[in-house]
Image 1 (tube, helix red, strand yellow):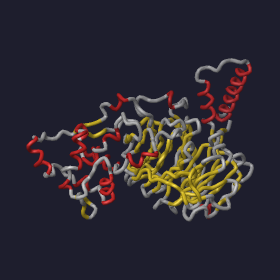
Image 2: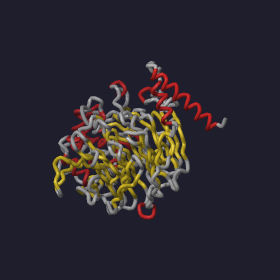
Image 3: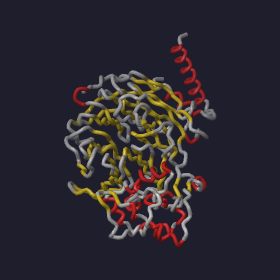
Image 4: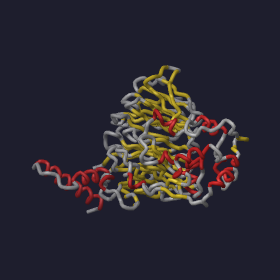
Length: 510
């Protein structure tokens, strides 16, 4: 008996036993559901529909993003050459092509309900569409000054979150908008922003960067986020962590990291299996348990997929998550003299402050910076730092003067990827139940589980970071490098898209 025939024969026996046990009313044994999922996911493979899929490789370009409708009936593809494709997920028939949906490549698609979806583009705009009338968009949102890369949605508040390479995160109020008059707030800004994601319950915002770390904003409150993080520069705080040198303009924000904070508490993640430079893509577990990311080294020769726990930890975990930088004690009678002496090279951190930052500092009710505080050519004179600005703050919070908040280890799983298609972002995804990860892999895909039994993450959290379990590796399914993939939220169905403009459909072949 051949190996393939044996596998088919064994599968039929297992199916028969399952059906027989159900007929007899026998209770499922321990691990029964895991066995079912393992059987289903380990047999996923590509399949051909009865209707050949139309290909527009010449004019649609790469498939940058794939998104199913909430009911799983429609698939929308975001394409390189300004177009959007719609497919019937039941028979894979292409039912609509929206040419010239944007003026540049379409980067992301996000369904807001069963019929309404949003797209964003390198033309710096976000557009809203209705699947029932696609002759033109419902509305166009303008505000970003660079390529818009992702869209999130808070259903309970009807707020759409967008982020772009201009470093801005915008919150668009869809309840109070009319044509040409859309209310939005710039809730966060930073250099090197790559992706912004929300957990399914909307209580956390996760941001990945081009500097090798991820930001978690716990207990998210969009109404106060802009004011809470006003003047805060994540890269400056990260520099302080790496250099073991305290910067007053960074330690003054230690309170943003403290466990007792009620809303918009910050935390950094930096434990990657490689020397991560650019964290190019980001996805959140359907239960909000972890973040899935793809990171690239500075020389672009290595790519890794990583899973990090993002759940709130107990207060005891944070008790020792800091480091004091000890400096020589200063006598009280020398304090006035020391104020006029630059005791350490503050030009390092003041070089991060521009005129815009200075204006933000002046307007900050926390700091009360005097008007005579000035800058030249965008870099503040470090010799005058420490006289009144930070002294007042540290007098009330002396414990923060030389304290650096440390990052907790949060890496749970990882695996090395092929470094192909350099310069293109590869979008990963979770299955709807969160058990399985799909990752673009050269001209195919790979499916990963958290362990060999393909259990849910909550039942198999490792004590130490471990490699993801490879369920299957499907190579050479595309004519070009795969850059996107997506699971159907309602059915056992999976799709992947490549730079060559082709979409491949997968399902369990039992």
